[in-house]
Length: 133
Ligand code: SF4
Ligand code: SF4
View 1 (cartoon, rainbow, N blue to C red):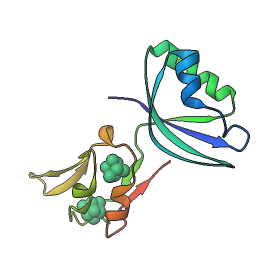
View 2: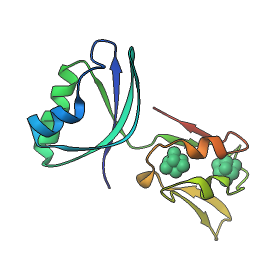
View 3: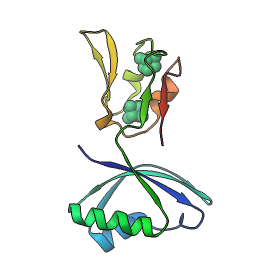
């Protein structure tokens, strides 16, 4: 499974060209999954391909630029108390991360394929889903 990272920028580092730095300085190939960055800061979610030592060095470099970096292992929370297993999230998810479990008749979420697009949050009629960025 690809490790995904959440990068949080502030107004002092928002103009850093993260993709360029990763490729040219560290031979690391970024796969940007989501970016919501404005003049005063923002958030980017990406995975990185390449040598693991290079990725570690690249992360340290980005931290040195003041970019906050967090490994994302779970960023959609599903509240079982609110979920009514309607299946609306299943049909909108572009990565088919939701599955119907025929044993329990419940909808389950496989976090490893989620790309944090947010489509399921909008589709859910009971607001059972929350994104943790
Ligand atoms: S955020 Fe997007 S990819 Fe992730 S589970 Fe929801 S719809 Fe699927
Ligand atoms: S859309 Fe919401 S209520 Fe419906 S199955 Fe998905 S999480 Fe549960």
